[in-house]
Length: 66
Image 1 (cartoon, rainbow, N blue to C red):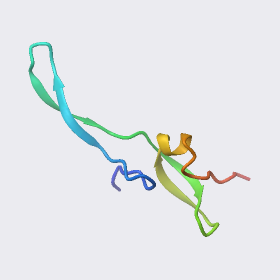
Image 2: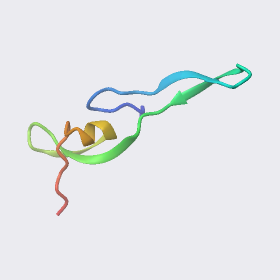
Image 3: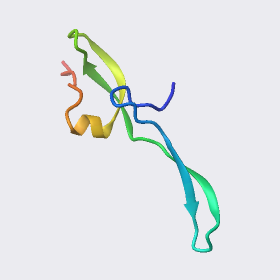
């Protein structure tokens, strides 16, 4: 399963670590994904991998655990 947010599509970013001596090595930044139970548009409850920025801005409705 890919490390992609199911709401906004945020995925890993690739860049370079740059040392003081300007040595460059590859680096990967992964999104902070959480597996949460969400309520879909149809009203059903399912699990989804969602980034924390989508959770905090209210892009998903978390299901109430009974």
